Image: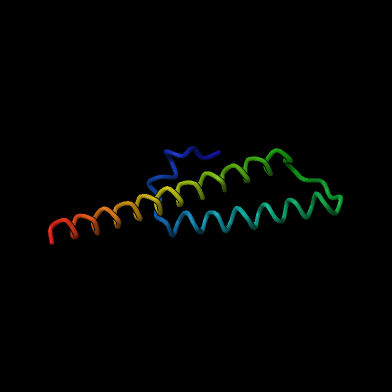
Length: 81
C-alpha cells in the first residue's frame, strides 16, 4: 500500500494514470468475485479502494490550493489598482 507522502511528489498525469490502472484492476477483481471465481487476494480490493481515494484526495487538495492561489492573486491585483 502506498503512503500519501510517496504519492505527493507525483505529477497530476502520473496520479491520474495510476487511478485509471487501479480502477481497471478493481473492476476485474469485482467481476471475478461476482462471477464466483476465486480472487487471489480479496483484501486487495479494499487496499485498491483506499489507494484510489488517497490519490483523488491529493488531486483535490491541489485543485483547492490552486483555486485559493488564483483568488488570492486576483484580490491582490484589485487592491493595487
